[in-house]
Amino acid sequence: MRTILVIDDNPSVVTALEVLFSLRDIRTLRAATPHEGLAMLDDGRVDLVVQDMNFQADTTSGEEGIALFRAIRERQPDLPVILLTAWTHLETAIELVKAGAADYLGKPWDDNKLLASVENLLELGESTREVSKLRGERRANRNALHRRFDLRGIVFASGVMERLVELACQVARADAPVLITGPNGSGKERIAEIVHYNSAVKGGPFVQVNCGALPTDLIEAELFGAEAGAYTGANKAREGRFEAADGGTLLLDEIGNLPPAGQMKLLRVLETGQFERLGSSKTRQVKVRVISATNADLNQMIHQGRFREDLFYRLNVIELNLPPLAARPDDILPLAESFLASGPAGLSDAARAAMLAHNWPGNVRELKNAIQRASLLCRDNTIQPDDLGLVMRAPAARAAGDAEPDRAAIEAALARARGVISQAAAELGLSRQALYRRLEKLGISNAA
Image (cartoon, rainbow, N blue to C red; front, side, top):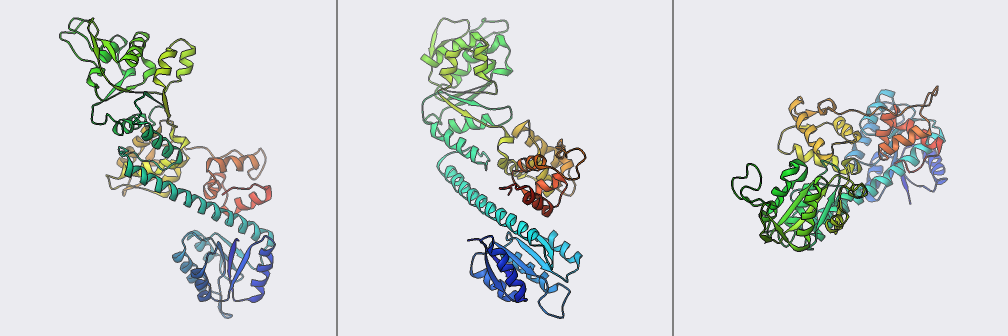
């Protein structure tokens, strides 16, 4: 059951709050002194604290409340605390809110306002605990993966990447072609490395070729080799990438750029392991694990007649789809921290918020470049939003002639902030408490 600890030396205040909270099926614990309240915090689980700021009849300074608040924060930094008093100076309350207090209400309080704040804070706390539990489970799973497999130093924290990496490790030992799809800069090469270094041929060579970076007339020679005189400038015989990868893995990056003639030869070598060098009739035999990668829509290319359907099915025995960085925001900050690990620079809170708000169209590659740039430009080894050079998203538009954001604007801001109230409130130009009140008024639930 949800539990609130009320620390107040006025019995009538505590009774009134107890009755009010019982209407929402909230259990209330009572403490008349700071010492008693702290002891109750140590004894059992409390979801929220409502505390007075003065505990002696002749005291209105709020010093006791400040000391109590700091003691609570030392014990449980994430526990929400609502300040409640008739005497404390407003400046004192503001300073405590800046220090982490969830809300400040004066006596006599407004029941609806207090309940709205309490409900949202309890919901936020429950969501925070669920997120912490999920992150703990993910951390344990990541550690298990690192112990069992060679992950080549890949950094991730999102559930979608955890599942993808685990799948890559599982299929690594299968002697079957793998197709890795995903946008440019998302890390397809690193996934290919994981497949190779956890496969049965991990002791063999790992050879990469970017099909999109080779001239069309040289792709066949690059893949399958060429005899001397096979083309202008071919003064001596050379082996191709398939021969170089014999007994190991060949990564064909940007496979969608392979021309029709190369596609046909590739299909044959996948089926039989046999090929001929350009300019030669001698058949050669290799055993190579083929991994392909592309950012193209191969199905669309098949319909357009630009990619062989039989080759697609041969390459796509197992597909690993790597989502863009914007679809896995939990990876953004861990990746950024990993790029900063070798230097003295660190991220400010504002820079972290800016990074989470950015769409990262260039994915991990863009993130790495932004961090490298910021590390060179920042002052005092602290990276600020301006150092990152990101195009910031404009605040949500408000309805014409309206003084406050409407339901659509609030829901859109919450979606972009992934339910983080403080981030959504900042985007909307509201305080956290003001946003809580609008959520209650509009009946928007599951905001936290």
